[in-house]
Image (cartoon, rainbow, N blue to C red; front, side, top):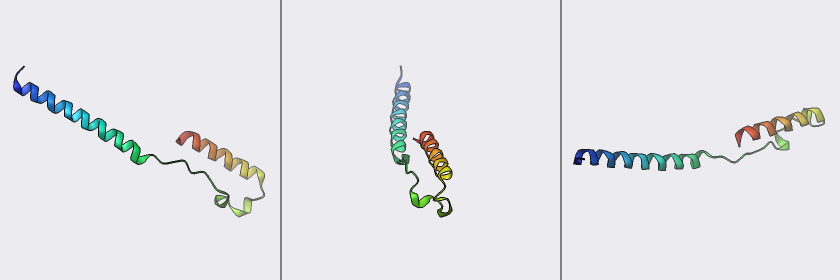
Length: 68
């Protein structure tokens, strides 16, 4: 091998290391903890409607499963 090929391989390896490092850092920045619905999030007019509340909890559980 000549020095030009060696230099190319060195630069390529350095670029791969940087890409791997940057990729790992990005994952940590965008990770958010799940935040469920509170009772204050529920509309007052449906406070006594058990069908609505069970549907809201079902939807919340499905979203949590998809997003965590």
